[in-house]
Length: 478
Image (cartoon, rainbow, N blue to C red; front, side, top):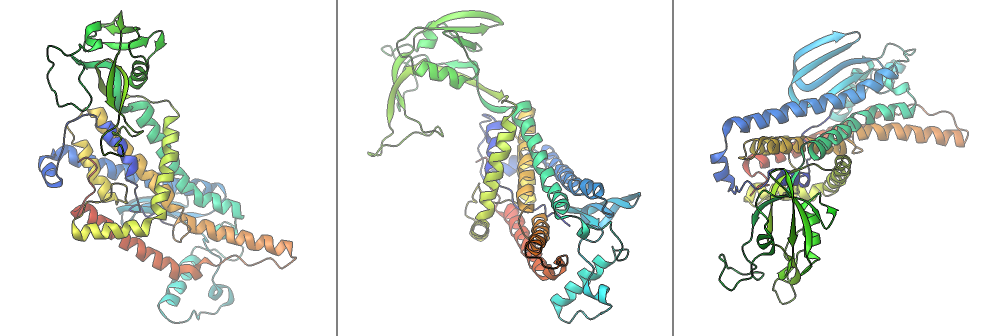
């Protein structure tokens, strides 16, 4: 079996990188940014993705290997990569190794398919033609793994549920690895956002949408400034309510115009109690995404709320421990949506490649594209932990893509083998219900022509995405 690692990566989960990179103040054109990229961090970012991809592939194949050996299947090879072997070592009956191209991996299990008719009946005639020759070659390769009709350490003789467990083991390992990485990102490193530390204070209250940059003699002093707040103060509580996020503090202030609030702040490590009376001010009305709402008249809608004049510092904010699992589930759904729309999105990628149009940031990427983005993240002029968080998010998203893509019900992907096993199970149940003779094991080598077409489609898709990621990459940070 093999795992095609260049498959599809949903770009939407990479929005966490935008949040993680903080307010770096960097804008770029595709050409201009790359002219300013710090080469060494850029290369390090790419190397981390390459190593991370290798680890992801290794874990995927371990997910197949462990249950296969547990169920007694003879495993001849466990290989990471394709092409010439760089290193290998035989331990027991299994050869473990690394190959040149880190685009996938495989384990070689004995008897993936039942003996071919030629092997069982002594008839060497398999027909003529390209696809028939492919079927014959597949059967011959499979027969080489068998040790006679009494060989019970073969895959095809396992109960259906055991075969399904073996085939699902690989994708599930990618899902679990993604969950671990997202948990590290969200709960260990944190997501950049507004903290409860005061960054700056407004001097006065200005009308919503104004272009005024300086306070005049008649302007109303900003409440926080008048209350004695200072940059660096950490808001701990408001009217006895413990404050964990700036959004929580902002909500209380917005709902309390002209009401005195007792605010406890930490200043140089010492608690201070300040009395803040938010003033009633007109502010832009925002939607759930934080964008101004445009009314029917084409103007930005406004709302009167309590205003204090506090601007928070941004920083990495650790999320609850379950945030990683929630993000994993959300990203699985997002990538599944990409898969459903894949033909349309690949068409759009092809159009953008030849026309130079801007790529859809929520479209598919290749591993090359992921590597380029990782290099950009690693070379950003932001704190080290922000960059680490960005690369961790990329690896997590890549593993989600590997999980979803390998579940497609197409050979040679794992989902295709699952469908074959389930179909055999359906046939057996049908035979028992109607008192029929037990059916023969499903000979999946007959599907080799379909497998060939799928492989060609994967190669074409991978080539298109790689070309697009090189010549017209996705712009996530513009």
